[in-house]
Length: 115
Length: 114
Image (cartoon, rainbow over the protein chains, first blue to last red):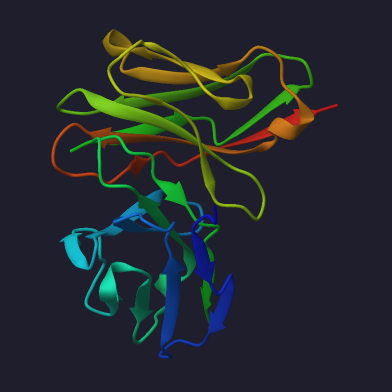
């Protein structure tokens, strides 16, 4: 069974440009999460999808970030325009809908560098 | 609000020595607690989780953790470190409620010395 995959693994862009990160969850997982780790800080929650619906987006830092999950499969996270403070590692995780403590399976992350 | 504190951003142990990684949490309600590990160039992998059953939780690769409510702690231990245990370890908490997000500690980088 394939795990959570993320693309690209690395992205280097200039301030003001747009970047789109993609996450493919484990097949059959309706829950999809985005997290971010800024250098030297803890991993922080961004948002949670259940199928195609945003269940919780309380962690999104501002309106430059747009997350979508069309058709309830893969998800994209777009940053437009990117700022220096957006640099970090963006993780995606997925889990099955079921018991409350369903394990969240994480992808390898996308390392974003904004110059 | 809930938070997680991991004492020691870097911990070094000799191969064969005891591994002890500390985690303290604060939560207004009894939480669910997790330890994840991240090996280089890989995603986070679940080591173990506490979900209000047994307070001593056994995980993969010989790791275990004990939930101590009175101390609000969930420390991770392994009796004998192996070189392959070198990685970054994260403690996380999930509140018992409708929110399913994980709140992470800042991570502890474990180095195993030969």
